[in-house]
Figure (cartoon, rainbow, N blue to C red):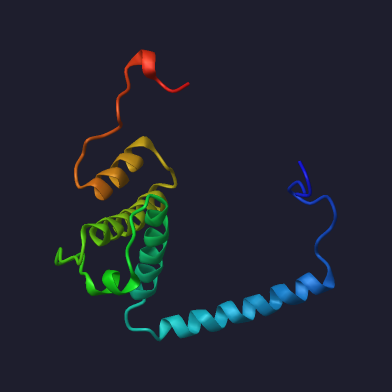
Length: 137
């Protein structure tokens, strides 16, 4: 398998150096939690991260948008600079909806996948049906 080590590591990784870094990370996370609590609308952080993820994922499918266009558009008002931006916003909202559905149920089910798909495509077409002789094996 090349140079990639298998998980979990076989050796004890709780060295002094790692434990010190863990304590340092804990301190920074507590600091971040305190700062985040002072932000009036904490959803703005989550919304921004979801939008960034949606933009990058959409670029893989050759759906290209700029940050300026994304932030000048408004999903709630259905006001978009372009169709690509509209699709990125739909992906972002589907990501947030999917996260909430899985968080609430603890499961990623076919129903959840279909709800996410419906959010992205603005319809409830469901799973694509392939003829038996052309099914992917």
